[in-house]
Image (cartoon, rainbow, N blue to C red):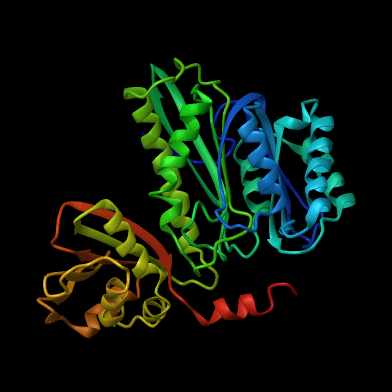
Length: 407
Protein backbone atom coordinates (compact mmCIF):
# COMPACT_ATOMS: atom_id res chain seq x y z
CA UNK A 1 0.00 0.00 0.00
CA UNK A 2 1.29 3.43 -0.97
CA UNK A 3 -0.02 6.72 0.37
CA UNK A 4 -0.41 9.33 -2.36
CA UNK A 5 -1.54 12.93 -2.53
CA UNK A 6 -5.13 13.70 -3.33
CA UNK A 7 -8.68 12.86 -2.34
CA UNK A 8 -11.86 12.14 -4.27
CA UNK A 9 -10.22 12.68 -7.67
CA UNK A 10 -7.25 10.39 -7.01
CA UNK A 11 -9.01 7.33 -8.46
CA UNK A 12 -9.40 6.94 -12.23
CA UNK A 13 -12.53 8.36 -13.82
CA UNK A 14 -13.54 10.78 -11.06
CA UNK A 15 -13.96 14.52 -11.36
CA UNK A 16 -14.87 17.15 -8.77
CA UNK A 17 -15.54 20.82 -8.28
CA UNK A 18 -16.12 23.35 -5.52
CA UNK A 19 -17.81 26.72 -6.01
CA UNK A 20 -19.08 29.71 -4.05
CA UNK A 21 -22.85 29.63 -4.47
CA UNK A 22 -23.70 31.91 -1.55
CA UNK A 23 -25.94 29.34 0.13
CA UNK A 24 -25.19 30.87 3.55
CA UNK A 25 -21.55 31.95 3.60
CA UNK A 26 -20.09 34.90 1.76
CA UNK A 27 -16.87 34.84 -0.25
CA UNK A 28 -16.13 31.16 0.28
CA UNK A 29 -16.77 27.90 -1.52
CA UNK A 30 -19.93 26.22 -0.22
CA UNK A 31 -21.05 23.69 -2.84
CA UNK A 32 -19.18 20.62 -4.08
CA UNK A 33 -19.63 18.00 -6.77
CA UNK A 34 -18.12 14.53 -7.03
CA UNK A 35 -18.73 12.90 -10.42
CA UNK A 36 -17.77 9.62 -12.06
CA UNK A 37 -17.59 9.37 -15.84
CA UNK A 38 -19.09 5.90 -15.56
CA UNK A 39 -21.84 4.51 -13.29
CA UNK A 40 -20.69 3.31 -9.87
CA UNK A 41 -21.60 0.69 -7.33
CA UNK A 42 -22.58 2.71 -4.27
CA UNK A 43 -22.48 1.97 -0.55
CA UNK A 44 -23.45 4.12 2.39
CA UNK A 45 -23.63 4.35 6.16
CA UNK A 46 -25.81 6.96 7.82
CA UNK A 47 -26.68 8.58 11.12
CA UNK A 48 -28.40 6.54 13.82
CA UNK A 49 -30.10 9.70 15.09
CA UNK A 50 -33.90 9.27 14.93
CA UNK A 51 -34.04 12.82 13.56
CA UNK A 52 -32.66 12.37 10.05
CA UNK A 53 -32.03 15.20 7.60
CA UNK A 54 -33.78 15.09 4.25
CA UNK A 55 -30.59 14.28 2.29
CA UNK A 56 -30.01 11.24 4.53
CA UNK A 57 -33.48 9.93 3.70
CA UNK A 58 -32.92 10.59 -0.03
CA UNK A 59 -29.51 8.89 -0.12
CA UNK A 60 -30.62 5.87 1.90
CA UNK A 61 -33.43 5.28 -0.59
CA UNK A 62 -31.15 5.56 -3.61
CA UNK A 63 -28.50 3.24 -2.20
CA UNK A 64 -31.06 0.70 -0.96
CA UNK A 65 -32.63 0.61 -4.43
CA UNK A 66 -29.44 -0.79 -5.91
CA UNK A 67 -29.31 1.91 -8.58
CA UNK A 68 -25.91 2.86 -9.95
CA UNK A 69 -24.70 6.28 -8.80
CA UNK A 70 -22.68 8.80 -10.78
CA UNK A 71 -22.76 12.05 -8.84
CA UNK A 72 -22.91 13.56 -5.36
CA UNK A 73 -23.91 17.20 -4.80
CA UNK A 74 -23.04 18.70 -1.41
CA UNK A 75 -23.82 22.06 0.16
CA UNK A 76 -22.47 23.54 3.38
CA UNK A 77 -24.00 26.19 5.62
CA UNK A 78 -27.56 24.82 5.75
CA UNK A 79 -28.25 21.25 6.90
CA UNK A 80 -31.70 20.76 5.30
CA UNK A 81 -32.70 18.96 8.51
CA UNK A 82 -36.09 19.27 10.23
CA UNK A 83 -37.45 20.86 7.05
CA UNK A 84 -40.42 18.56 6.38
CA UNK A 85 -41.68 17.52 2.96
CA UNK A 86 -40.34 20.72 1.42
CA UNK A 87 -36.81 19.78 2.45
CA UNK A 88 -37.15 16.34 0.84
CA UNK A 89 -38.59 17.90 -2.32
CA UNK A 90 -35.55 20.17 -2.44
CA UNK A 91 -33.33 17.08 -2.48
CA UNK A 92 -35.23 15.88 -5.54
CA UNK A 93 -34.93 19.31 -7.17
CA UNK A 94 -31.19 19.35 -6.54
CA UNK A 95 -30.77 15.86 -7.97
CA UNK A 96 -32.93 16.73 -10.98
CA UNK A 97 -30.89 19.86 -11.71
CA UNK A 98 -27.65 17.90 -11.54
CA UNK A 99 -29.06 15.06 -13.62
CA UNK A 100 -30.17 17.41 -16.38
CA UNK A 101 -26.85 19.25 -16.45
CA UNK A 102 -24.83 16.03 -16.45
CA UNK A 103 -27.07 14.03 -18.77
CA UNK A 104 -27.66 11.24 -16.26
CA UNK A 105 -30.58 9.80 -14.32
CA UNK A 106 -32.05 11.69 -11.34
CA UNK A 107 -31.85 8.43 -9.37
CA UNK A 108 -28.09 8.33 -9.89
CA UNK A 109 -27.50 11.58 -7.96
CA UNK A 110 -26.90 11.61 -4.22
CA UNK A 111 -27.16 14.83 -2.19
CA UNK A 112 -25.72 15.90 1.15
CA UNK A 113 -25.97 18.97 3.34
CA UNK A 114 -24.26 20.28 6.44
CA UNK A 115 -24.78 23.37 8.56
CA UNK A 116 -27.60 24.98 10.52
CA UNK A 117 -30.63 22.81 11.33
CA UNK A 118 -34.14 24.05 10.54
CA UNK A 119 -33.43 26.43 7.64
CA UNK A 120 -34.79 25.80 4.15
CA UNK A 121 -32.35 25.73 1.26
CA UNK A 122 -32.35 28.76 -1.07
CA UNK A 123 -33.08 26.73 -4.18
CA UNK A 124 -32.30 29.53 -6.60
CA UNK A 125 -28.74 29.55 -5.27
CA UNK A 126 -28.55 25.75 -5.12
CA UNK A 127 -29.62 25.27 -8.74
CA UNK A 128 -27.30 28.05 -9.89
CA UNK A 129 -24.53 26.39 -7.89
CA UNK A 130 -25.20 23.05 -9.58
CA UNK A 131 -24.76 24.69 -12.98
CA UNK A 132 -21.46 26.22 -11.89
CA UNK A 133 -20.26 22.90 -10.48
CA UNK A 134 -20.99 21.00 -13.67
CA UNK A 135 -19.26 23.61 -15.82
CA UNK A 136 -16.17 23.64 -13.59
CA UNK A 137 -15.78 19.92 -12.79
CA UNK A 138 -12.37 18.52 -13.61
CA UNK A 139 -9.91 15.78 -12.84
CA UNK A 140 -6.84 16.29 -10.68
CA UNK A 141 -5.84 17.36 -7.20
CA UNK A 142 -6.85 20.99 -7.56
CA UNK A 143 -10.46 20.08 -8.34
CA UNK A 144 -10.54 17.60 -5.46
CA UNK A 145 -9.08 20.21 -3.14
CA UNK A 146 -11.74 22.72 -4.18
CA UNK A 147 -14.43 20.17 -3.31
CA UNK A 148 -12.83 19.41 0.07
CA UNK A 149 -12.80 23.12 0.93
CA UNK A 150 -16.40 23.59 -0.18
CA UNK A 151 -17.87 21.07 2.26
CA UNK A 152 -16.26 22.69 5.33
CA UNK A 153 -18.30 24.47 8.01
CA UNK A 154 -16.37 25.14 11.23
CA UNK A 155 -13.49 22.94 10.04
CA UNK A 156 -10.19 24.78 10.02
CA UNK A 157 -8.55 22.62 7.35
CA UNK A 158 -9.75 20.41 4.47
CA UNK A 159 -9.47 16.67 5.13
CA UNK A 160 -8.35 14.31 2.37
CA UNK A 161 -6.49 11.03 1.93
CA UNK A 162 -5.61 8.60 -0.87
CA UNK A 163 -3.72 5.32 -1.32
CA UNK A 164 -2.92 2.84 -4.04
CA UNK A 165 -2.70 -0.95 -3.80
CA UNK A 166 -2.21 -3.75 -6.29
CA UNK A 167 -5.14 -6.09 -6.84
CA UNK A 168 -5.08 -8.76 -9.53
CA UNK A 169 -2.01 -7.18 -11.07
CA UNK A 170 -3.71 -3.80 -11.49
CA UNK A 171 -3.18 -0.59 -9.55
CA UNK A 172 -6.27 0.28 -7.55
CA UNK A 173 -6.79 3.65 -5.89
CA UNK A 174 -9.00 4.67 -2.98
CA UNK A 175 -9.39 8.33 -2.14
CA UNK A 176 -11.67 10.39 0.02
CA UNK A 177 -12.58 13.64 1.69
CA UNK A 178 -14.58 14.45 4.77
CA UNK A 179 -15.76 17.30 6.92
CA UNK A 180 -16.41 17.25 10.62
CA UNK A 181 -15.45 19.46 13.52
CA UNK A 182 -18.45 19.69 15.83
CA UNK A 183 -21.53 17.54 16.51
CA UNK A 184 -19.18 14.56 16.34
CA UNK A 185 -19.82 11.44 18.40
CA UNK A 186 -19.29 7.72 17.71
CA UNK A 187 -22.66 6.45 16.63
CA UNK A 188 -22.68 5.25 12.99
CA UNK A 189 -20.32 7.65 11.23
CA UNK A 190 -20.74 11.18 12.60
CA UNK A 191 -19.75 13.41 9.69
CA UNK A 192 -19.96 13.88 5.95
CA UNK A 193 -17.45 11.72 4.10
CA UNK A 194 -17.17 10.78 0.45
CA UNK A 195 -14.92 7.97 -0.74
CA UNK A 196 -14.11 7.03 -4.32
CA UNK A 197 -12.33 4.05 -5.81
CA UNK A 198 -11.63 2.71 -9.27
CA UNK A 199 -11.72 -0.85 -7.92
CA UNK A 200 -14.05 -3.34 -9.51
CA UNK A 201 -16.04 -4.76 -6.57
CA UNK A 202 -19.63 -5.89 -6.13
CA UNK A 203 -22.06 -3.53 -4.45
CA UNK A 204 -22.73 -6.16 -1.77
CA UNK A 205 -19.07 -6.50 -0.74
CA UNK A 206 -18.53 -2.75 -0.99
CA UNK A 207 -21.39 -2.19 1.45
CA UNK A 208 -20.19 -4.94 3.79
CA UNK A 209 -16.63 -3.61 3.84
CA UNK A 210 -17.76 -0.05 4.50
CA UNK A 211 -20.24 -0.92 7.24
CA UNK A 212 -17.76 -3.23 8.96
CA UNK A 213 -14.82 -0.83 8.92
CA UNK A 214 -16.86 2.09 10.25
CA UNK A 215 -17.05 0.28 13.58
CA UNK A 216 -13.30 0.61 14.17
CA UNK A 217 -12.73 4.01 12.56
CA UNK A 218 -15.45 6.67 12.34
CA UNK A 219 -17.40 5.08 15.19
CA UNK A 220 -14.37 5.48 17.44
CA UNK A 221 -14.15 9.28 17.37
CA UNK A 222 -15.87 11.92 19.46
CA UNK A 223 -15.55 15.68 19.77
CA UNK A 224 -18.54 16.67 21.86
CA UNK A 225 -20.89 13.72 22.39
CA UNK A 226 -23.50 14.93 19.87
CA UNK A 227 -24.56 12.64 17.02
CA UNK A 228 -25.56 14.72 14.00
CA UNK A 229 -28.81 14.54 12.05
CA UNK A 230 -26.85 14.57 8.78
CA UNK A 231 -24.12 11.94 9.23
CA UNK A 232 -23.38 10.44 5.84
CA UNK A 233 -20.58 8.21 4.60
CA UNK A 234 -20.83 7.30 0.92
CA UNK A 235 -18.46 5.27 -1.22
CA UNK A 236 -18.51 5.00 -5.02
CA UNK A 237 -16.68 2.31 -7.01
CA UNK A 238 -16.54 2.70 -10.81
CA UNK A 239 -14.38 -0.32 -11.71
CA UNK A 240 -12.06 1.66 -13.99
CA UNK A 241 -8.91 0.09 -12.54
CA UNK A 242 -9.75 -3.03 -14.53
CA UNK A 243 -8.93 -5.49 -11.76
CA UNK A 244 -10.73 -8.85 -11.67
CA UNK A 245 -14.05 -8.16 -9.97
CA UNK A 246 -13.94 -8.67 -6.21
CA UNK A 247 -17.02 -10.83 -5.79
CA UNK A 248 -16.04 -12.93 -2.79
CA UNK A 249 -13.88 -12.65 0.28
CA UNK A 250 -10.28 -13.65 -0.21
CA UNK A 251 -6.86 -12.12 -0.75
CA UNK A 252 -8.10 -9.39 -3.10
CA UNK A 253 -10.90 -8.43 -0.71
CA UNK A 254 -8.50 -8.26 2.24
CA UNK A 255 -6.13 -6.03 0.28
CA UNK A 256 -9.01 -3.73 -0.58
CA UNK A 257 -10.25 -3.75 3.01
CA UNK A 258 -6.86 -2.81 4.43
CA UNK A 259 -6.64 0.15 2.07
CA UNK A 260 -10.18 1.22 2.96
CA UNK A 261 -9.35 0.97 6.65
CA UNK A 262 -6.30 3.17 6.20
CA UNK A 263 -8.34 5.86 4.46
CA UNK A 264 -11.15 5.72 7.02
CA UNK A 265 -8.81 5.82 10.01
CA UNK A 266 -6.79 8.66 8.52
CA UNK A 267 -9.88 10.75 7.85
CA UNK A 268 -11.39 9.92 11.24
CA UNK A 269 -8.25 11.10 13.05
CA UNK A 270 -8.16 14.27 10.96
CA UNK A 271 -11.69 15.06 12.13
CA UNK A 272 -10.95 14.32 15.76
CA UNK A 273 -7.82 16.46 15.71
CA UNK A 274 -9.72 19.34 14.10
CA UNK A 275 -12.55 19.34 16.62
CA UNK A 276 -14.06 22.75 17.22
CA UNK A 277 -11.60 24.85 19.18
CA UNK A 278 -9.22 21.92 19.60
CA UNK A 279 -5.47 22.26 20.10
CA UNK A 280 -4.61 18.54 20.25
CA UNK A 281 -5.62 15.14 18.91
CA UNK A 282 -6.38 12.97 21.95
CA UNK A 283 -6.01 9.20 21.44
CA UNK A 284 -6.82 6.47 23.93
CA UNK A 285 -5.43 3.01 23.22
CA UNK A 286 -6.66 0.12 25.34
CA UNK A 287 -4.65 -3.10 25.36
CA UNK A 288 -4.99 -6.31 27.33
CA UNK A 289 -8.81 -6.20 27.44
CA UNK A 290 -10.89 -9.34 27.90
CA UNK A 291 -12.99 -8.72 24.76
CA UNK A 292 -12.86 -6.44 21.74
CA UNK A 293 -16.14 -4.85 22.80
CA UNK A 294 -14.77 -4.10 26.27
CA UNK A 295 -11.69 -2.48 24.74
CA UNK A 296 -13.83 -0.25 22.51
CA UNK A 297 -16.16 0.78 25.34
CA UNK A 298 -13.24 1.65 27.61
CA UNK A 299 -11.39 3.65 24.98
CA UNK A 300 -14.51 5.60 24.01
CA UNK A 301 -15.31 6.35 27.63
CA UNK A 302 -11.98 8.11 28.15
CA UNK A 303 -12.02 10.22 24.98
CA UNK A 304 -15.63 11.25 25.67
CA UNK A 305 -14.91 12.43 29.21
CA UNK A 306 -15.28 16.23 29.36
CA UNK A 307 -13.11 16.39 32.47
CA UNK A 308 -10.33 14.39 30.83
CA UNK A 309 -10.58 16.49 27.66
CA UNK A 310 -10.28 19.66 29.74
CA UNK A 311 -7.22 18.23 31.52
CA UNK A 312 -5.59 17.52 28.17
CA UNK A 313 -6.20 21.15 27.17
CA UNK A 314 -4.55 22.29 30.41
CA UNK A 315 -1.64 19.86 29.93
CA UNK A 316 -2.54 18.53 33.38
CA UNK A 317 -1.54 14.93 34.19
CA UNK A 318 -4.79 14.35 36.09
CA UNK A 319 -4.88 10.57 35.75
CA UNK A 320 -7.76 10.37 38.24
CA UNK A 321 -10.11 11.61 35.55
CA UNK A 322 -8.96 8.86 33.19
CA UNK A 323 -9.42 6.20 35.86
CA UNK A 324 -12.85 7.60 36.67
CA UNK A 325 -13.93 7.44 33.00
CA UNK A 326 -12.77 3.83 32.78
CA UNK A 327 -14.67 3.04 35.98
CA UNK A 328 -18.06 4.32 34.80
CA UNK A 329 -17.76 2.79 31.32
CA UNK A 330 -19.75 -0.27 32.36
CA UNK A 331 -16.84 -2.68 31.94
CA UNK A 332 -15.82 -4.62 35.06
CA UNK A 333 -12.13 -4.66 35.96
CA UNK A 334 -9.76 -4.58 38.91
CA UNK A 335 -8.27 -1.07 39.27
CA UNK A 336 -5.42 -2.57 41.32
CA UNK A 337 -4.14 -4.39 38.24
CA UNK A 338 -4.35 -1.90 35.37
CA UNK A 339 -1.58 0.42 34.22
CA UNK A 340 -1.90 3.89 32.68
CA UNK A 341 0.69 5.60 30.50
CA UNK A 342 1.05 8.89 28.64
CA UNK A 343 2.82 8.48 25.32
CA UNK A 344 3.95 10.88 22.62
CA UNK A 345 6.87 11.76 20.39
CA UNK A 346 8.86 12.65 23.51
CA UNK A 347 8.50 9.17 24.96
CA UNK A 348 6.34 6.95 27.18
CA UNK A 349 5.59 7.55 30.86
CA UNK A 350 3.98 5.23 33.43
CA UNK A 351 1.56 7.28 35.55
CA UNK A 352 -0.59 4.72 37.40
CA UNK A 353 0.20 1.19 38.63
CA UNK A 354 -0.81 -1.17 41.46
CA UNK A 355 -3.85 0.94 42.34
CA UNK A 356 -1.94 4.18 42.91
CA UNK A 357 0.10 6.88 41.23
CA UNK A 358 3.42 5.81 39.79
CA UNK A 359 6.61 7.71 40.52
CA UNK A 360 6.65 10.15 37.62
CA UNK A 361 7.69 13.75 36.96
CA UNK A 362 4.80 16.22 36.66
CA UNK A 363 7.07 18.46 34.61
CA UNK A 364 7.87 15.69 32.11
CA UNK A 365 4.20 14.68 31.99
CA UNK A 366 3.23 18.25 31.12
CA UNK A 367 5.72 18.19 28.26
CA UNK A 368 4.11 15.03 26.86
CA UNK A 369 0.65 16.56 27.22
CA UNK A 370 1.76 19.72 25.42
CA UNK A 371 2.31 17.89 22.13
CA UNK A 372 -0.23 18.26 19.27
CA UNK A 373 -0.95 14.52 19.50
CA UNK A 374 -1.45 13.00 22.96
CA UNK A 375 -2.02 9.30 23.66
CA UNK A 376 -3.25 7.62 26.82
CA UNK A 377 -2.29 3.93 26.89
CA UNK A 378 -4.38 1.71 29.16
CA UNK A 379 -3.21 -1.84 29.89
CA UNK A 380 -6.14 -3.75 31.42
CA UNK A 381 -4.08 -6.91 32.16
CA UNK A 382 -7.16 -9.05 31.42
CA UNK A 383 -6.70 -10.52 27.94
CA UNK A 384 -5.39 -9.93 24.42
CA UNK A 385 -7.90 -7.52 22.84
CA UNK A 386 -7.13 -3.93 21.85
CA UNK A 387 -8.97 -0.85 20.56
CA UNK A 388 -8.23 2.80 19.81
CA UNK A 389 -10.51 5.82 20.07
CA UNK A 390 -9.81 9.40 19.07
CA UNK A 391 -11.02 12.75 20.34
CA UNK A 392 -9.63 16.17 21.13
CA UNK A 393 -9.15 18.52 24.03
CA UNK A 394 -11.98 20.71 25.31
CA UNK A 395 -11.15 24.39 25.05
CA UNK A 396 -12.68 27.81 25.68
CA UNK A 397 -13.10 28.23 21.94
CA UNK A 398 -15.48 25.27 21.69
CA UNK A 399 -18.03 27.19 23.74
CA UNK A 400 -17.40 30.42 21.82
CA UNK A 401 -17.93 28.70 18.45
CA UNK A 402 -21.16 27.01 19.49
CA UNK A 403 -22.63 29.87 21.53
CA UNK A 404 -23.33 31.85 18.35
CA UNK A 405 -23.20 29.13 15.65
CA UNK A 406 -26.42 30.21 13.93
CA UNK A 407 -25.30 33.83 13.62
